[in-house]
Amino acid sequence: MRLGNFLRKNALAVIALVLVIFPLTSPPDYQFYIVERSLQNAILAIGLVILLGYTGPLSLGHAGLLATGAYTYGILATKAHWPLWLAFLAAPVVAGVIGLALGFPSLRLKGPFLMVVTIAFGEIVRIVALNEEELTGGPYGLQGIPRLINNDLGVYYLMVAATMLVAIATLRLHRSRIGLALLSIKEDPLVTGVMGVDVSNYKVMAFVLSAALAGLSGAFFAMLTRYLNPDSFTILDSATYLLMVVLGGMDSVVGAILASGVVTALPEILRFMERARLLVYAIILLLVIWGPSTGVYKKLEDRFGRKSVVAPGVKLVDRG
Image (cartoon, rainbow, N blue to C red; front, side, top):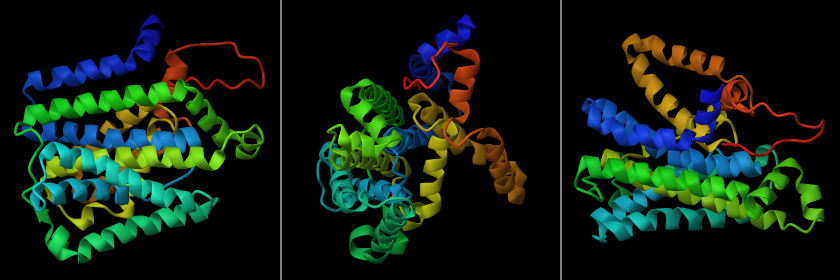
């Protein structure tokens, strides 16, 4: 049990250490790329933890926000010839501004209506990218996107640093007064509003933070692939990102990072099964998702981590 407690308390540090050491093992290029994609997906998944896990609204349009960040970086770097660092920083800013514009009207909706709006937004972004051929390359794609650092190892360690900083900042947010307000909104927005908390503004803030992280993830996606095509940003991709959060535990940052690695790597591991791989992939994911709001990481944490005695009716909110 001591090992379980140690891993629970230091899970993020252990993940960071493994990621730092990983390139030193001289992995094959394709395995290295899968880990890079896992880190890129983890940043977006952490953004969904802030929105869905901490605050409650469900979004199926984050592929559109990912596309916004990716095309912002790609267009500014290849067509506008901005300095790469400025193009990189512009990606989360533009995605955050679009998140702000989308969040104010849409977050007043409830239930399936909000989900429909986010789905529509994602499709609008994809269709615009498909038809604005002069700007985005249209169906032919945007090619020749430069990397911020002209070195594979440099880009990798930049992504590791970005993922860890985002994770630490999100954990600090969770334990702050703002985080407590977001959790209260998720549990009961009506009572939270009566207590004097501006529910609408806090929801919009969570959506903007989530959108900005999706934009940051999009900039890394553009650097990794060096090619953007509208078919990479569909509703199925949004559902995959949502699956990462559900699999890792709705409000678990560490779980989101681990689940991003699993969901990114599993289809490639099962590639030898050819036509049956997607079916087997779906079955495996259904088997490992034990509960809609807990996830595998939380289940393992409860099994091997802390064992607290809590008074009836008191809910623990401290999650990793």
